[in-house]
Length: 202
Image 1 (cartoon, rainbow, N blue to C red):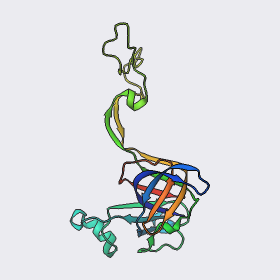
Image 2: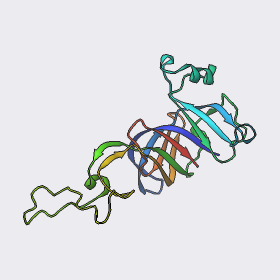
Image 3: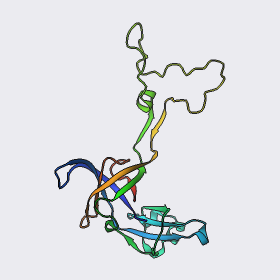
Image 4: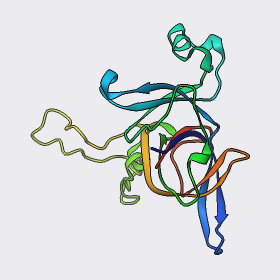
């Protein structure tokens, strides 16, 4: 199972060897540290827990400090489930060299938070008419079909909090890898703002 955690940087226009141009995203994937191995015999499932980044010691509670022990103080701990964990051991380092140019990958991350938004931005409603006496209804949701009902049905598209969702994007491809700067160039756009921790899996 190939995987690594990284932080989203910026988007670029990448030119392949044959001259084709791709919209791509740069991900900085500093070496991850294996902090825990989950096994089916002991935990009921198999997974590898890895840590990324550095955090001040005083910002972590005693349970996390006792868990990571001498491995370091990590900004984020993530469990990667599924697949064969191979010969991974606690303390091992995972770097960008686990992937190669041309690998098909899936990227998961937290999207940008946009706060409380209306139905036009959140769901793509076209709004009300702009003429014939419509004064303040350009972005209103309109009727929600309340006949013979005393409640709002679940799933009704209305205004509310938008963004900050975990999203997976598949069918992406690694266009290039720079082992000196620990950067991976991935085709297309991936979720999150700059600095968002993303999970890259094959």
